[in-house]
Structures are given as C-alpha cells and as structure tokens.
Image (cartoon, rainbow, N blue to C red; front, side, top):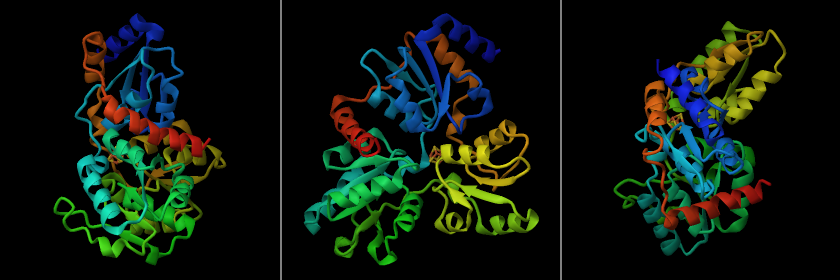
Length: 340
Ligand code: SF4
C-alpha cells in the first residue's frame, strides 16, 4: 500500500522530484530511488538534477550535506529527521570547537582540521573556518596528505579507525599519532602531549563496523579456502590489515563486480549492502563478515517516505543557516578542488 502511494506521488511530481538513497538503505527503499550511491556521490549529483524537490533516504548528516550543496531553487527533505549517525554524534560542533581552540591557542601550532563527511554541517563549518576540509572514505589518503602539507599537523575527526587505516597507508609512524582524550567537555585534553604529533585523532567510531571480529575473518579463511575478504575502512585496523582489500562502499561494489564468476567474497560492511551485492551478482558467493544493520538507516521506511511525499508541499525541509552553510561549503569545495 505505501509502495503504491510512493509510485503515485512519483508520477504526480515527475521530474520535479528526485528520490536519492544511500547504499545502506533497505531494498524496500532502494527500489523507489532515482539515484543510489554513497553520501558524497549523491550530494555531488544534486546541483545537476532538474528536480526541485530532493528526498534524501539516508541519515541526517547526508541530508544536511545535500542542503549545503543544493541550488537555491531546490529543497532537500529527509523522511525521518531523527535518523542520526552514532559516529557523527560523537563529534558535536561545540566540542570540536573547544578542542581545536585549545590546541591552537595552547600549542601555537597550525593544526588543520579534516572532517570525515560523516559529520554535522556545523563541524564541516569549523573546518572551513580554520583552513581545513572534508574527506570521504574514498579520498581520505589524498585529503590527509593535503592537510598535512597545509600546516604543522592535522586534527582528523570523528572516525579513529579511518584515521588509523589512512595513516597506515601513508606510512605515518605510531609515534607521530595521538588518540585524543576529549572527555569532560574537553577538560581531559592533554595539549603538551600533542606537541610532537603529526596526526591528532578524534576518538569516534562507527558501531556497525567496529562490531566485526578478526576471529570471524580467520574462520572464513579456513571454511572457504581461497576466498577473498574485503572490508570498509571504518573497520578496526587489525581487520583492514588482514583483509584482501578495503575501501568505500563504491570500492566494495566495484570489487565484487570485477571478481571472476564463482569467487567467494566475504564483505565487511552494513548488511543491507552486502545482501544486495549477493542479489546483484548471483554468479558469485557473497557472504557477510557479520550481521550488522545500521538502526538509524533503518528509520527510513516506506511508510514515512510515503507520508513525506503526500505532504511534500508543506513538509519541513533541511535548512542550514548561511552562517554554517558558507564555511561548510568552503570546506567541501576545498576537497573537490584537491580531488579534481
Ligand atoms: Fe553512521 Fe555507521 Fe550508520 Fe554509517 S553505518 S550512518 S557511519 S552509524
């Protein structure tokens, strides 16, 4: 029934409406989307779309990113604004501001903030204001190299696993990294300990990817000799090191696509995407490294999508104030320039 309503509303709005879905959405949602992709791939498409109504099926920071890069005549909506991201919530802008200000003022060093795209718009704005930028899991290596070339060190946030995995790829030694203690509203931060460090790492993580276990990986290796194992770089470093490959959701999809028929591939990322890969490539055996659904992604349902579309003319849309939007856009544009 909700499915029929969605189809009717899509017909009614035609090209004025575009429904975008992140790879971690359920098949119930993905089947209604006009475009699917990772958060940045989708945000990049928005300006090019003819549609004036953009419905983003994903978590809130993704809809916010879309609202930062939208055209003036477009509106961005999310079917359930309470769909947050556990990792993004670990680095609220007020705390990032306190930590960065303390480091800059007390150390006197030029520290460049680099935010993973999984952050609220206000955090991207902090990066924009302080000469920093944004990165994705696909370009973290390039962006971290860039940020290191801009100052005396980098504050990477909020995902410590992505920071550590990227540091490994770039050969940044353990002694040059520091996992920050941001407890007590920033009071626990030990600024003198940051002085000889190149990479200052925010202690956030994604519970969905942290859950995967090295022991399970080893079991798969013995159960399926010759299998390939690929994981997302939000997984802990010991898993990334033991895998045959690691990368963004787009990388994982391309890896499976390119593998020869008959290959057994164990995939460590959110379960909706892993299951979909199994459906998309029936000539390969796709096995989840573990069952790990993102409960926030699951807040987007056919019911709330249908309700949004029925009330689109009066529905609340994502509104990022100019005070945040302008510096956040600068941070995003720096990334697009570096990665052009
Ligand atoms: Fe956030 Fe992890 Fe869910 Fe992605 S999978 S939205 S990083 S909690």
